Image (cartoon, rainbow, N blue to C red; front, side, top):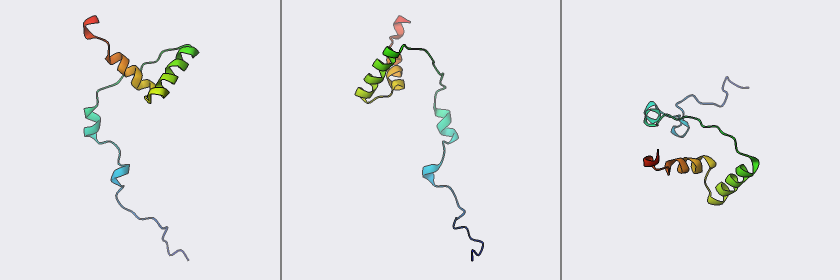
Length: 73
């Protein structure tokens, strides 16, 4: 017989599964999504470079934008 028990316990969620706090969200700068087209060969070249260097495509593009000299703007 079941005795009304489901085998689950009520309690607080674990700290490992806790979502971001308001303080975490406040520290991050606002972001803007950038979307543009590449031809297939350019995309393949970028993807291979990312795989070889162990970086994401997004990180590579962020680094490239970060390397732009402010004096040239």
